[in-house]
Image (cartoon, rainbow, N blue to C red; front, side, top):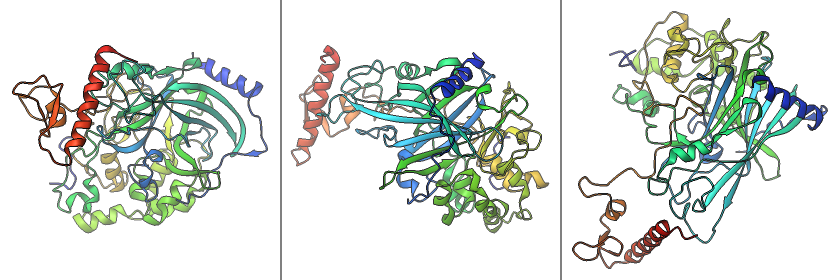
Length: 508
């Protein structure tokens, strides 16, 4: 078997509104230095030492694609908080209140952002005297039983040569979709998801909230490249985990320089305040897997704190990559000759004639040609399979970036044809056909613990609790034993009974 082989192979109105706001009421400050990232004293999933300990600030994946159902718009999705266990309460998953989540747009290829869409969040708690995330079934985002909620603002920051030109607010106090606690707590999660989709002036749309992690891959690659003998391939190790997502759909005319120069470079960052009160960039992501498997340990934290303008310092990691050497050592597949200028063209400059802007400065950005119409039948290998609407021309949710990256790294573009892959070809959940396109998050309740016992309290809490009497109603519970743990079980049982009465009578 070939190593890693696959099993089978109003458009202008928002711009006018924003431009008018920038001109009339924006914070014009051409001489003021922009909020440039400071060196961090402190992507992909857990891709650098410092950020792996700060999950709320960790950008796991970035996607950018021409919207399949609205091709005059571009959709950008940035995901955060890796490996969210759906049942991980009582403190479920929120965006950080002390962070700036930024989506950067470089529309002239100079490795400097001309536009930044900045998301900032605020957490609200209705009742601080309970440990519960929700105090009863939640029917809407403004339901009194949704105890912990978040809202967010979006600022559009306009820059020129890394200096602030103006800033204007384009979204204010928008609700966030909550974590999917479970079927009892959120019986119609799809309704909550729909309520969190918010339309902005001029045809833009935004969403923030929990979603199924759209990245599909067998991450056991880190166990000596799938076990050292291909014993570890074919399982989506991200199946069942969620992420926190930001999705933004904007008119193409707003983000690109002109119809004659439709290529944009996109990356996302997170900044938080350091001990001195200064904003410090702690996470950065453009193309997938770059900081995860291209940059060595010594450069990972520095890359997360840097900007594309300074990417020349990481050039050797691309021209002389480590991964092909590891594959050669373990699987005896000869590594392509260096320097790897083919990788520079694809990942730092864009493919000439497809998504490479004129006079491009090499930099690590996800580059998208907004004039390429969406494919009617997207192919998971994107450009490698003749589908120019896919990766590395932007990145769609369905693009199999693991297989594509492995094949390119192993020389697909320089004559070393191969069909390398991890045997995980698609996400476990289907994506949507309209914004925000993401699959709904996996619920915190995953059904009965045992077959044939019904959906009752014992299924939810296990054998530690038994009904009183031979056929009790399930509303009065006692612990199975009189050990020290019994008091804790009774406390949970009492809370459950109270919650049940509250849900029935809707006492607020």
